Image (cartoon, rainbow, N blue to C red; front, top):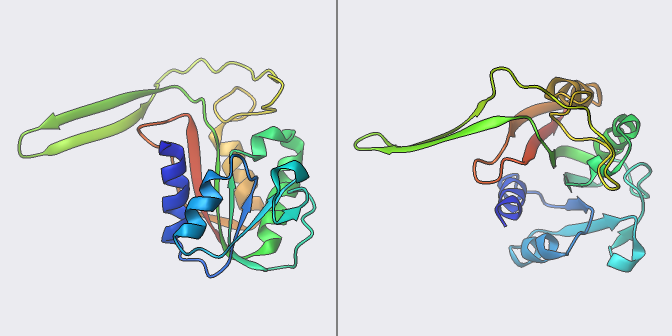
Length: 187
């Protein structure tokens, strides 16, 4: 649920008048956001999940700039990496302002958590100084993940920027550092 909390928190902080969620998943997030007053449209390739719109992130049947914010959480890694630029271009096309993405990140880190009198709690994820990155092998669901030999963070960030986005914020939640979030602004 930590990932859901970050998803909802990042999206709500952008205060969209109209938002698009790509990938319905369990429906938990869309239900929560709608209860919080977010005007939300869902899109998924699987009609069995009952999205508002059935379609692919690679060719969304939606108007240009139709949404203030587009949310795409834990979806893009299910596409071959070669399709990422096309998916990002589609997200850029249908948003008028911003997007929030999350994808798996397996970059090795150490978690540092200490509470000191007068200083309070200090929590940090510290990158491994000499990581031995393994090559990514398709596992039947994930075509790629950040932190594998072929998919360093710098490559993913370069593709996001090439799609026309400014990366306002990127982070891995301390409590569940297997996901990386990107808060993007359309340039």
